[in-house]
Image (tube, rainbow, N blue to C red; front, side, top):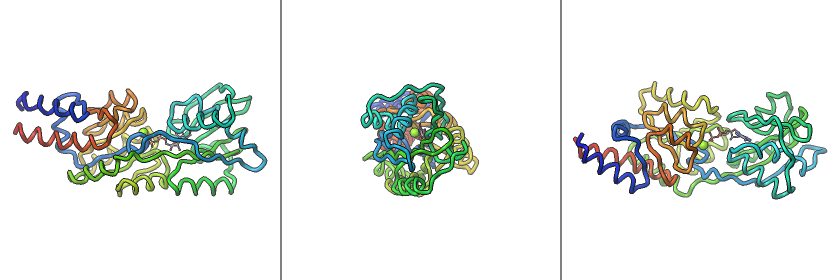
Length: 293
Ligand code: ADP
Ligand code: MG
């Protein structure tokens, strides 16, 4: 490899909004055949908004907002921010939370007004021993089938409400998936979210292969399993929960709009958070190495 050609490659990369950690990155980029895409914050904007609030029988909607909002206020997750902001906008100041805990990829818990509150996926609530009321479960399923995320909230051992948050697909994601396919790559959608939401997002951007309900700690394992099938894997992600998978992948690409942890774990950073730059990066690497050979 001539240093000049590599410099041209990386300089062009900077123009395209791609930061490359080192020239050796280009070699693995060239061999990539599978691109694993994180959903939230990568394919979607990750900017969620609270759009619906439902209370169980005998429960005030304002209490669902207060308790869910208070416990989510302590979390940085995009879902949590949508709930805390949406709740504060509807009911005003939120009570403080103590004993806050984050259950990665599942939800949050904490003590609010002396009550033990849990908010997150239905499995998290059920694991705590709470039973999901029929009506609320129907609302949850309908929301998920519509491609939205339902957050179940409960306190003192019972499910008390469901909050629906919605995220939107980035306007450039469908074109980015087309560009990746044109390069002969197979796109795969990887998410901790449920299958209905994952398939809805995948359909909107043209991805066939979906791996949903993957806990943060297992994302790297999914990459490892694909590699065990002789695939050369690029992973694109933005979150703390993507860092291990980004490091495990043959090529890790971080969204520049994402967390520092993801950027540090990755080989490449897509500065503008535009997924099309992932295809640009792979095309650039192939071309640059073609020049060198
Ligand atoms: P992704 O893999 O798409 O980036 P995460 O792994 O961060 O998503 O989260 C997976 C799922 O866990 C979310 O879709 C949501 O259902 C649930 N979840 C995670 N964090 C929270 C939270 N703070 N409040 C409620 N639910 C949460
Ligand atoms: Mg993410």
